[in-house]
Length: 256
Ligand code: G
Ligand code: G
Ligand code: NA
Ligand code: MN
Image 1 (cartoon, rainbow, N blue to C red):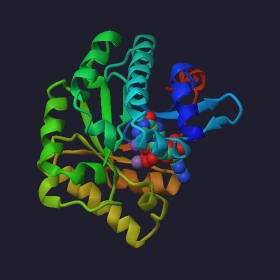
Image 2 (cartoon, helix red, strand yellow; image 1 turned 90 degrees about the horizontal axis):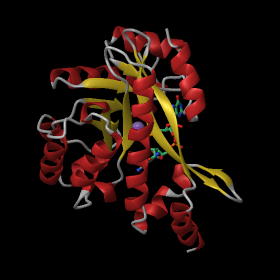
Image 3 (cartoon, rainbow, N blue to C red; image 1 turned 90 degrees about the vertical axis):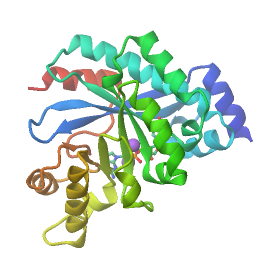
Image 4 (cartoon, rainbow, N blue to C red; image 1 turned 180 degrees about the horizontal axis):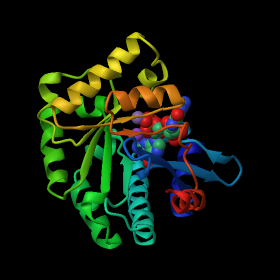
């Protein structure tokens, strides 16, 4: 209950911060964009990680105003980076949606308004929903994803491989990207079962015309295997941990 009170106050006092983890194109080695990850700058407890407050924010529906702020802030910051670092393929930002947000009635209108207010193109915003959320009510998922697609957003299935996917539905999702869960990537190695799983997910995604993001890339060996498997993007500590804005800006400056 104390946490709930604190969370309410944190929204008013604007105590949330976004960290940005680079998304790397495995073909070029360049930064293609960032995943925005929320943290709570608590006055007494310091920087609180999302796993310590997102579940309570979900239960109390405080995730709705919080999520609105997160999307707005990520779009605002990305617009600044796009102007500072113009490139042929513009930088994109990826934002995580919780289950409660995904069933929020005015989600599409809210995102449309955020794009208008920040001047960011819908093409540059990617929304991540977990496989479990996507599969909860497949018909409403498809309907909602289609409405988001109409705003030109990019859509991603997060933590793929950890939930129950009905493959017969996957091809009906108008998603651009599958993110391979880091539990598979971290156990990749020569002839390991997990390498085969990653390979299978990549082939499946490509057959459905989706790009693949491998999360949790931590070693040069994992990177080499993923490149051999024609995985499009990678994210993970091998490239960079999530960064504060200033550090991400510095990284963009030094990106070849
Ligand atoms: O950043 P970190 O690895 O601590 O994130 C832990 C979990 O919190 C991840 O599952 C991540 O998806 C989730 N998370 C991080 N930022 C956000 C956010 O902005 N919104 C939601 N809904 N979840 C987030
Ligand atoms: O559930 P989700 O995929 O959104 O989780 C993102 C979280 O994963 C981030 O909070 C980040 O801190 C964490 N993360 C990112 N890269 C790595 C990595 O290479 N290894 C590990 N162990 N965690 C990572
Ligand atoms: Na994610
Ligand atoms: Mn994930």
